[in-house]
Length: 180
Image: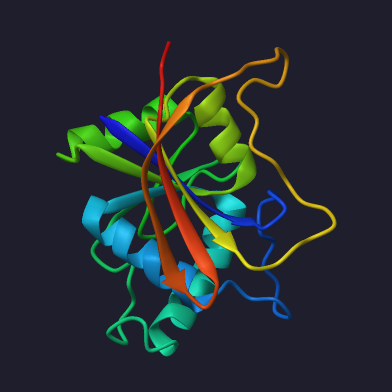
């Protein structure tokens, strides 16, 4: 199964932190909705999922979507060590369990949507094939970073597959990750 990590980063390389004062850019929300729709699914951590429920209404209101919930009819998997049941989604405790569930549902691609802990867990286990980074035109003083392996220095070559502007200063970089 192909696994694609999707994230929005700041211009200085941190994970973009959203808040009511600094919501996600509409262009990134619309892109995520399109990527999730194409995959038919997404995997997300519990805290990010809770925030995404608010983001779904922002996407619908932004005029970037059809006005409907962009996550309706998708297989949503929440990775959590503490929560065991979330209505309307599958809750799992390991990355491999998430991928196995989606593969059993007939998916050939899984979309990882957040947050940093989830991304770092999949990366450290070598389960990411591609990465899509939306670079937002903001800089933040603190934030989270992607880590390949938190205990050992790792260096991983990537291959640029695509680079395109999404609008409003947001640039998208799409990479294939090597698995050596």
